Length: 118
Image 1 (tube, rainbow, N blue to C red):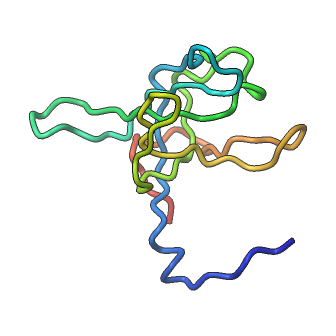
Image 2: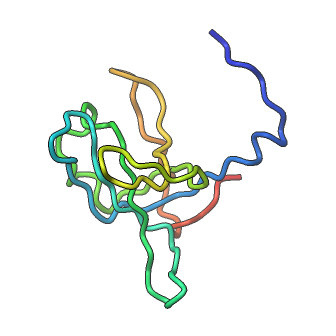
């Protein structure tokens, strides 16, 4: 089923950036959720690195969360934060497929964290 088409103006509102996973672990008492700490090259007003926490339901595809550490993936970074099982999630992992076709969207070479998709 094809979804409703959107205008280029609507599409341009979506911010997709590459982030580097700095930590990954299972969310306690859940079967599907991982807690990712992701570096987008953002800095706090105090000048300190300010990674984001992103909660993602991908444990079926990632049996060892530690395997994600250091890897770069595409994330939607301008969604309103939401709380999932008591954890603030400030973004969304951008992936494709399901079951056997599931795949991460990742750059073909390392880029600086926070690099925007165009």
